[in-house]
Structure formats: structure tokens, C-alpha cells
Amino acid sequence: MDVTTLYSIGELSRRTGLSVRTIRFYSDSGVVAPTTRSPAGYRLYDLDALLRLELLRTLRELGVDLATIQRVLDRELSVAEVAAAHADALDVRIRMLQLRRSVLRVVAGRGSGPEETKLMHRLTQLSGEERRRLIDDFLDGTFGTADAEPAVVAMVRAATPDLPDDPSGEQVAAWVELAGLIGDEDFRARIRRTAGYQAAGRTPDIESEAGEELMEFTRQKVAEALESGIDPLGDRAAPVIDDLVHRFAGVFARTPDTEFRDWMAQQFEEAHDPLVDRYWRLVWIVNGWQVVPNLIPVYPWLIQALRNDRDA
Image (cartoon, rainbow, N blue to C red; front, side, top):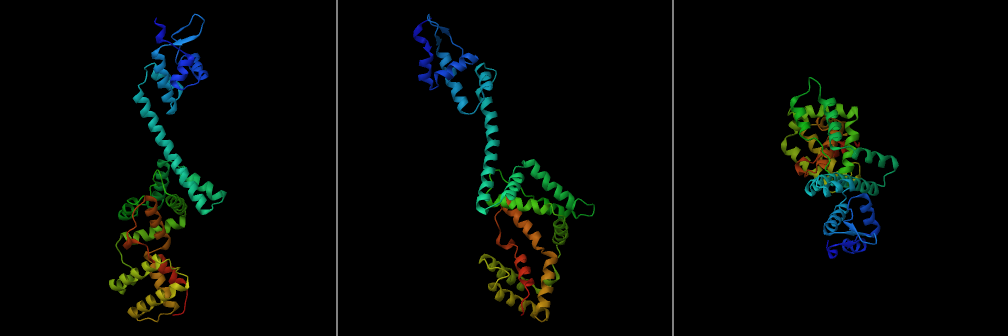
């Protein structure tokens, strides 16, 4: 054999960037065995060994384990097969790291304590299948009765929350809040009642009797208050709610007093439960849906402002 085609361990180290100690380990393990030995007993390697070492180094840098590399070098597996399998594994790892990053950002932004941090981590660590099962349990437990309206079930299932692989901090926080809501029996009763009301296409008496013009005016004014960040219990809400109460009182020939405010709040609450509206808002956030201005839940603000008893 022409000795010019053979390389010492030192030469292999210079050509591959691997340390002599590492090459000796691979050699002793049988992954890249020496081609022959010099008269003095030193290991010598041919071009094929050099190429095997270069491939080995590349695969190791890509995270492939040594046992799998051995199978590639022995031609039991192709590089393409190994690459596909490890790409899939990396996808899972990346999704997990993205989720952890989102949780950490929420914890940092909210100044969360140990208990809330553990809760967020536990809920977001659920697999996609486990999260779907959590939602399915909620839907089955809430609408799984024989008397459940098919339209109601279809409406709620069509908007199933699904946390994405790389959620924003807002989506993580919304998912955690949503998970708490769907486990509450009182909330389940409230959404069952409200969803049935809405799915049946029933318009609350106060809305039908007030008329579309006043209702559209009301939605517009409350939406503007929401966009301006006006607290429904603050002083800035007073002129908005007072004006609306007077307008409704005029339509219903009532005195715009505290009793009338309570009556208005009760009427709107029948079909616009604030907690249920919050649920839908959280679903929009988790699913990353664009918020449609006409669908902004204005009733929670309106009801809360009406309940804040003020003299007309």
C-alpha cells in the first residue's frame, strides 16, 4: 500500500478539527478503525477513514448520537433517514423551548409568584392532545346532556381554543385563565345558559324594545369608552352611562334612577354574562384571531357601570 495515502492520528486531527484524544476514542470504539499500523506500531488511516471521521463530526454537531452514526457508517441507515428523524425530534424540542420562553416572559412581565409560575408551567406543558382532552371534557360536561341544543354545541365547538406551538405571552396568560374558567362548575352553568340563549337567536327584550338605533348608539359609545381605557367604575364613566340611562329611560317611560339602572343591568345580564363574554375574549386571544370591532364584548363594561349605583 502506498504510504502517501495514509494519515497518522495527528494528521487526521489537523484535517478534521477533532482532537487526537477524540479520534483515538472513536478508533478504540471501532467507529473508525485504523487501516493499518506503521512499523513502529502507530495507527494509520486511509482516505475512507478520513471521510468517515468528517461525516461523524458533522452528524455529532447536528446532535446525532454515536450509536446511530455507527449504523450510518455501516450503511444500515442512510443519512437522509437519520436527518428526517432528528429534524422531527428537533421540532418537538423547539416547540417545547418556545413554550418555556413564553411562560418565562409572562412570569417576568407579571411578577408572578411561585404558585402562579408552577401553575402556568404545568398547564402549558400539557401536550396538544392533553389540552384538547381538557377542552373536550369541558364541552362534554357542559353540553353533553341529552337536552343540549345541537346549535349550542356546534357554536362552542367551532371556537375551540388551541394554544399555538409558539404562543405569545398574552396567549399563555389567556390559556391559563381559560383553563381556570372551564374547570369552574358555576361558569359551566352560566355559559350553558347564555350560549343557549344566543344560539336560539333570541334578542333580549330590552334590546328589541329599545330598537336598533339606540342599541347601535350604545355599542358605539361603550366601544369608544373601552378604547379610551375608561374604567366603568371611575368618574370618567359617569357622563357616558348617565347619558345612556336617560336615553333608555325615555324609550321605556321610566325614571332614570338606581332602580332603573339595576333593571337595565339585569336585562343585559340575561344574554350577556360578563364572565361568558370574558371566555370568548380569551378564546380569541388563544387562537390568535383578529378582534373584529363589532364583536368586542361591550356588555361587561356596560353592566359593571350600571351596577355602580349612582344617582341619576
